[in-house]
Every structure is written in C-alpha cells, then in structure tokens.
Length: 241
Image (cartoon, rainbow, N blue to C red; front, top):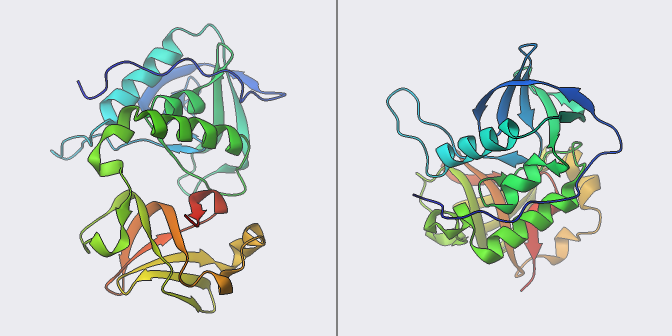
C-alpha cells in the first residue's frame, strides 16, 4: 500500500450555514455527484489523477478516492457551502463539503491525500487548509512521503515536468508585462502573477525580492520554451530563509 495509517480526524473549518445534500457517487478524491446529478468540485484541494485511456492512476489517486468514499459513506448528514464563485469553467458546482462535524477537504489535506489549491475569491477556510497541509508535510503523511512531492530547486527541473510541484530558488530578476509580474528563479523557470491578482500581494515589495530565496507551490506548464507556474495568492509563496 502507498499509505499506511491516517491522520486524526480534523475538527473545525465549519461554516455558519450550509445546505444539506445527498451524495450519489464519489468520482475521485476531489469530485462528487449529488443525487440531483449536480457535479461538485471540492474547493481548496486537488488530488492525483485517476488513470484513463489505458494510463495508470497517479500515485495516491485511488487512495484519495477511496478515503473520500469512506468519509461520505459513514455520514448521516452531508452539507455543503458554495463558493463565492460557485461554478468553474466546466460548469461544476464549487463547494466546501462537511460531514459528521468535519470538513472533508481539511481531512484529506491532513492525511496527505490532497494538495492545496488556492484560487481566489474562494478563500473560505484558507487558514485552516494551510494548517492541515503544513502538519501533513511535517509528518510526511501520504503524498508528502513521496520524492515527487519534495521541494525541487528550479534549476533541476526539466522541460518535461508537469503537474504539482514545490519549487525553490533565488529570485534572479523581476519582470513586468502588460498582463503580469514575473519572478525568474532561473533562465528556464518563472513564476507568473497576473496583474488582476496584485491587490492580494500588496504586502510584498517585488522590487526588493531580487536575490531573495523563496519556495513556490503550484502547477507547472511550458510556454515559449520556459517552465512557468502561476501564483494566484501569497499563500502559495514562502519568501526568505
């Protein structure tokens, strides 16, 4: 088995109000179907991809799905709280899900079965999810025990890397374009912060970051022969030693 044992049940991260629902089917570790056929994407987390088209599942994908099934199956009451943005581009309902006095996203994060996914303006429970993630990383629960999820220096990444990474390095230069602020950690790697997101970063003086070490977490993509990572919120950056 990939994961042995689980983290303690997570209390808290609960809403002042939520709506009762019935879950018909757990599709994967971060997506469920309700009895009314509504497809719900869990806010604040991402889990490894299940295999399809003859491709094997990513490590941890089956464990995340099965654990969410367990959490749902033993609950007499399930409720959800919709996000401020309550639909994604695929039409899925975006929500936090709760069962038996626990937040299911926080539980999966605490067990290391999910990674955090910070997308404003859906930031309810952000501090709670950050705490659950930090504790899981420190204890090397689940995914955090795998080499794949350990911090990687920017200058060791290849152009073939994709998916979720934690990347470290020093800011070599700061660039600005019409759309974005760019933090280059290497000639072949840059962090992208869109200008519409800059109000969230008002406490960061980008002009003073050159030469500063940082850690960034997020998803890699390749554009113009350069690996890039979009940072949507300061929660996905750790600046300084």
